[in-house]
Structures are given as structure tokens and as C-alpha cells.
Amino acid sequence: MSKKDIKVPNIGEFKDVEVIEVLIKKGQKIKKNDPLITIESDKSSVEIPSSDDGTIISLNVKIGDKVSEGDKIIEIESEKEIKETSAQELPKSQLPKEIKKNDVKKTNKSENIIVKDFSTKASASPKVRKFARELGVNINQVPGSERQGRVTESDVKLFVATKSDKNFKDQNTTEQKIEIEYSHSDFGEVDIKDIPRVKKLSSKYLMNSWTKIPHVTNHDEADITELEEFRTSLTDVYTGEKKKITPLAFIVKALTTSLKKFPNFNTSIDQIENGKMTVKKYYHVGIAVDTPHGLMVPKLRNADNKNISLISTELKKISQQCRDLKIDKKELFGGSMTITSLGGIGGSFFTPIINYPEVAILGVGRAEKKQVFMDGKFVTRTMLPLSLSYDHRIIDGAEAARFNNDLKENLGKNFAYKLAV
Image (cartoon, rainbow, N blue to C red; front, side):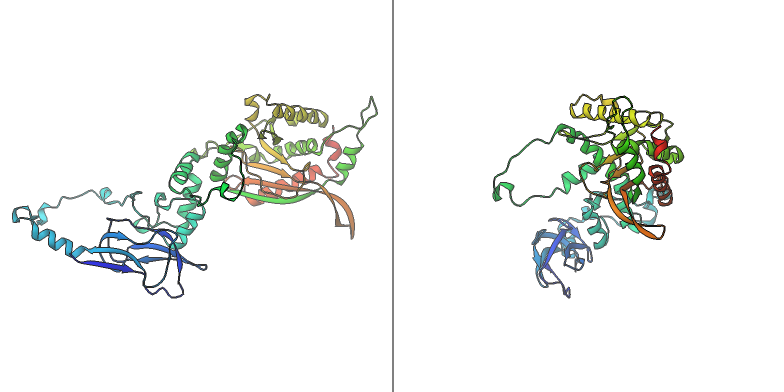
């Protein structure tokens, strides 16, 4: 039997480069030009093909190895030699008979369709393989749309968008799990603690939302100068003391007004696979509450029918119930749209994750005074950062921009006093 070494060919600028994928295994039959390994330099990645047919009898590289021209990749046993030997050893009575034309059965056209076997190596370019790795996707499980099932970047994106959180988790944690080379305790003292229960529960919803929804975030600023002047001037009619009403109460009221004008933002997409979306006729605003146990999102019910004072009172109530873990589980569901505010902590713009199955979320930063050019001169105005994330399947960019403009008007000087009624 003939044995042959398959080595790294002349790969130009690639020298002492890392093996990032091993595409074959011992005992596998390969053909000439079948991909063996993928190597990657700082500039690009390249697949190294086989220069001959045969069966792999030894594998000389593994992921993470550095290779250069002339390095041995595998040793094969010549396929041609195997066939000749096998034929000589078999008795004539066991040799395959000549196949006659009439012996070939006719097949239905539908039986000739190529169905991709996910247990085999996917056909894809190095660029697509790298793209899949960056997304944490096992490319062997991605159905290819091109000839012979070849996988494209679009196929990978579609796979990520349509897979459920469970399947996505299974394929990546079991097959693509990253092994940490060193233990954290090798570098100093550590503690192992349980992740808080609330964070454990919310993590699967966050993962589901991030992998299923194509997020886009629109950043803008609202001029709330007059609103802030009005808010800080409010006093109790009986005691004369100043009312402590947070800007969030005004934002909730302004948001419900915009939701009525843009009903697409008040929908849910839990039936999107069936081509349906649920348009809600109620206005229950979700409020992200920071608690010692993790983030919770209770709903402020029928916010459109409540004045600023009542909204402010209920915000305090449901926030405290969350911190005390006394909130009813049902109150965490059935929302129209969510507001997450970092104004009391700090920061400006960010990218909030949509609270599935809702289609949008409003992120609010800390208001600050800025110099704004108005009426031919620079004046000091109080500006509020707004970060609107939306599901691009339901809401397009132009609609999101118009929604933000309407929301800014609702928070502006022409609307601030009406909100208080």
C-alpha cells in the first residue's frame, strides 16, 4: 500500500501562521482539492486543500498550531492503491457484476434534490467561516442556499435570526464551547458565587431578544428646558411644599401620546413566524427598575389615562415592590413599550435591548445643559439624550426618526404644560 504525506504548500506571505480550523479527521476519505485546514494571518484566512486522493491515517496538526510551507498536515493511504488491493484479494464470485443499462432504476426528479447532511463539513469560503465564528455559529449546521449547498454570509445571518434561543444555545455551548487555558485562581484569590435568580431568569429573555430581533438604535436629544423649569416649580396646593416628581413621569406621558400617533410601536411580534403582529389598544408602559436582585420591568397600566402626579406615585409604588420582590409576576408582562432610564445614575447614549415580544424600547440618559444655536445665537438649554432601539422588521428608519421627533415635541415647551393636566 502506498502512503503519502500532504504538506503545507507555498502560501506566499503566510509564514508561521495559526491553524484556526481542522476540517478533517483520522480515517476520513478525501479527494484532491478537498479543504484540510484553515489558516489565518493578521490580514486574511485561507483554506489549504489536499493535493491527492486517499484515506487519512494520521493527523499532524491541531487548532492553535503554527504552520509554514513544507510542514506536514496529514499522512494518507493512496485511494487508488486501496482499490487495486481490495479487488485482487476478493474472489471472482464476490467481485461486483457489470451494471447493465436496464438495471438502473428510474428515479423521480424530487429524489435527485441534494439534501445537506449536517454531519459533514459545510462548503463555505474562509471569509464566511470567519464571519460564522465571530457570531458563535457552527457553520456545519447552516443550510446553504448556493449550488451544492455552499453557505453564504446571508445564510449565516438568516440562521441566527430564525433559530430559537434553545437551539442557538445548544449548538454553541456544546460544540463551540471555548476552553479556558488557565484557571482564574492561577492569578490570584477568587470567589465563586451564584448568579442572582432574577438575572438568571432575565438572561434567557435577553438572549432570545438579541438573537431573534434585528436591532437598530436611533440617537437623538430632546430640549426639555421649559419642562424642567415647570417640573421644579410644582408645589403642593395644600402644604406649599415642592412636589418631588421625576422627569420619568413626564417621559411616560409623552411616550403614550406618541404611541397613539404611531401604532406600529405598540405591537408585539410573538406570532411573526406566522406573518402576524399583535396591535395593542391599551397603553401599559414598561419601566426598567434597578434592584439589588437584578433588572426588573414592571408595567405601568393604562398610563394614557393618568395625570403626571398619579404616574409619579405609581412609579414609586411598583419600583419599591420590585426591590422588595413583592411584585406580582403578571405585572412583568403585557407591556406596550419599555423605558429604561439611566438619568439618575449618569451617561448619555447607549443601545438598549428590546423587551421581547415588544418591538421598541426607549433609553434615556442624564439631562445636561448645553450651548445650542437658536434664533441666530447660542443659548443654554437643558438637553435630554434619547436612544430608541426598534425592530427593523416592523419599523423602518424613517418611521423611527418621525417617532423620535414627535416624542421630542411632546417633551418640548409647547407640550410640557399639557402633560401635567
